[in-house]
Amino acid sequence: MPILEPSYSPRFYFKNGFVSTVYSGLVRRVELIQERERITLNDGDFLDLDWSFSEEKTNKLIILLHGLEGNGQRPYMKGAAKLFNNNNSDAVCVNFRGCSGEDNLKFRSYHSGATEDLEAVIQHAIFEKKYTEIYLKGISLGANIILKYLGERHDIPKEVKAAIAVSVPCYLAGSAKELHTFKNKLYHDRFLKHLVKRLKIKQERFQDLLSLEALNSIKILADFDNVYTSKAHGFKDAQDYYEKSSCLQFLPNIQTPSLIINALNDSFLSPECYPVKEAKSNPNLFLEMPKQGGHSGFVDRKNVYYNEKRALEFVTSI
Image (tube, rainbow, N blue to C red; front, side, top):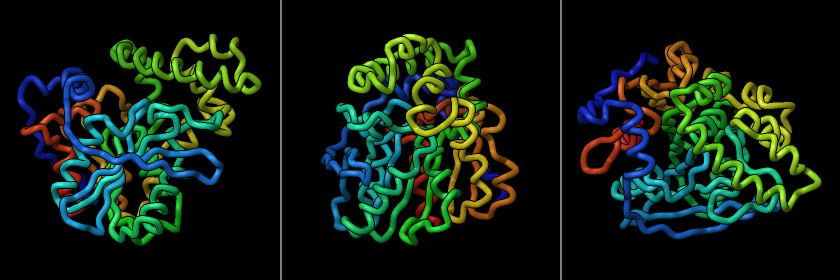
């Protein structure tokens, strides 16, 4: 599919990627009433789902997935949910394992390639909630999960009609390398602080699986993925995790209409994270590369973000 021409034109002070990223993460606020539901997964663990609803009864649902160390109450989650609620669609913001304010039950948690939990939510939406038209939207890590899910399976439910992936680290090894550069040090250190803090709780509960020595050896994000992410989720090491979990390799197989929005000034993304060749070769894959937007920082008018508007326009056009 030809590359789409973006129409995003932010106010001058949001043209800077750092400013738009930080503002969106730390300053933006979205008011939305949500109802929490806990579902039990096949391995005995749980997911907490934050629901919000259209004023009118609808058979439409958007499933929203957050990024690294996010949750269902983040503004980028509630912003999309609110817009879709106002346009005759229910919304469910998924909290990945351990991200809802309570540690999950297992030693494992979530990672960029963990599509089985998304599948569980989709099945719950279809068979328990009876939705017949489902859209998927993910930010960053959540976006990678969605695209990997759509490309690695041949049995995507017919109810899944479209997907929107925003600020996608399509090539995880490249994105991980970018996160370790000086320009991203503030982001790197913030992510690492939160991840290690939560891992300390796990280490106390699962001392047979993670030693204190191993925990204390984590100095950078790559260490975290070598010490915990890879070992807890069945990978040999961080590089094996990055290689097998990157959605880039699965993009040619996607048969569900899918829109990727990756800003050219997103400091988290390496050149491989802009899948021009894959989009041109797959009629179901649409790629937008706005010049501005940073990482999930597509600030627009009236507190509705460009990527949220585009998501609604995209599913409406399908």
